[in-house]
Length: 181
Image 1 (cartoon, rainbow, N blue to C red):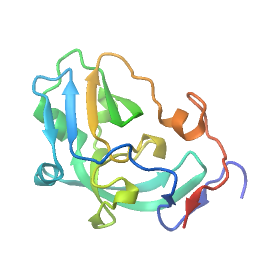
Image 2 (cartoon, rainbow, N blue to C red; image 1 turned 30 degrees about the horizontal axis):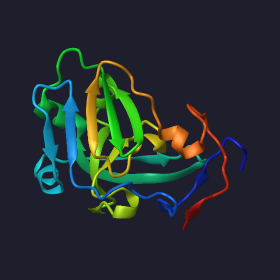
Image 3 (cartoon, rainbow, N blue to C red; image 1 turned 30 degrees about the vertical axis):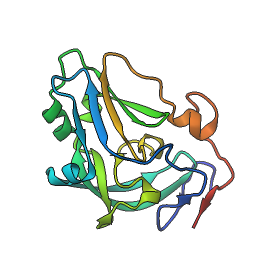
């Protein structure tokens, strides 16, 4: 395997050093919206669900092929909160972990709040009950235990790669394997 090829795994790894900063209670959607809303797990499950499939690529150099995700399209949530015209970006957060997507990216059919993985309820160790999945992005954009979506006029600094690598806006890196099979 060359330095640019991803290691192919048959299932998502479990990271023993990644845990939520607090117990997930709800997903809040706020900021530049007409109607800020909160969703608990039951209310998310009551919304129309969409399935998406894709290879799950990690910046650490591994991929899990053909993962089947199901959940609420972010575009559905946006339709409920009604973004103000000046909203250009969405910040997705879990505690101090933040990633941002443009409004155009977030409205894509490949961006969902996942509630299911491979036909089962999304397990806690993989971000359950609620995880951002952006199939066309690498795994640092897949915020586990996402509890806040904030619409803003400016791009919010992504802490995702900084927390993963320790280097702000870091490119791909090759740490020692830190996952358990």
